[in-house]
Image 1 (tube, rainbow over the protein chains, first blue to last red):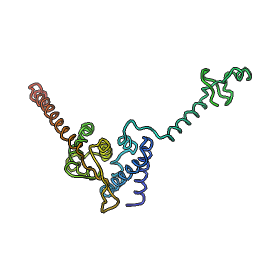
Image 2: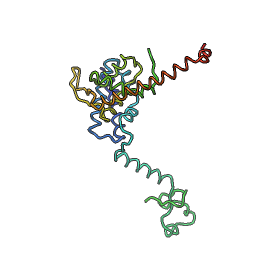
Image 3: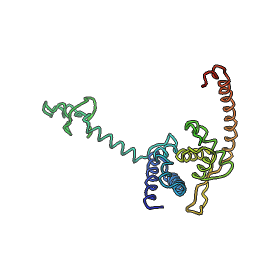
Image 4: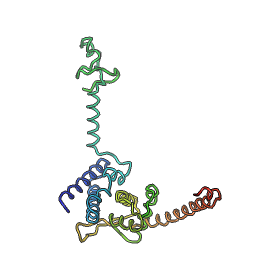
Length: 131
Length: 119
């Protein structure tokens, strides 16, 4: 087997592993599933070639989804990343307002409808500005 | 070369795997090869491997590692007692279904109107 074929197989297995992690599969189970897939793909590649072997397993993402239960929970790091992404998107979108009337009063009339921290246009008045 | 409806194949894949593994233990790609030899030439590895994992998680299959001559140890599957019981029950359900479907299909082809409609 050529080095290029090995790299292609390892890329597919890495994607499979990443998708399994996103599905909340534990490290020990992931390692076993990764090893099993590698063995099977290597056996198929020896038989029909790497391209056909990788085509046979299809998308690593769909393979991981089919192999794991639907009620799997996401890993904490993934949820934290999503939270940070949502928070940054929230603050950048300008869905915010000054927190108190004193802060609102301290700004001149032209700034009344703008976020006091980031100078973003005010879209909704009922949501607090993130600090 | 026969082609099978993927949805129908997905419905009977578990019983096919249980039947094959009740006869002889095997690892993922070998099981795919046995399915293809049995006539399921269009079955994809990406369908069989997750089905094996799900059956193992459900307790119908058990696995063990066996060192292979060509490389590292391979994961072999075999049926459990629960898997054999499930196979017996599913086999009976399948035969009942085939009988019922044959009755309907047979009635349809035997109808004179249907015979006239045929070219």
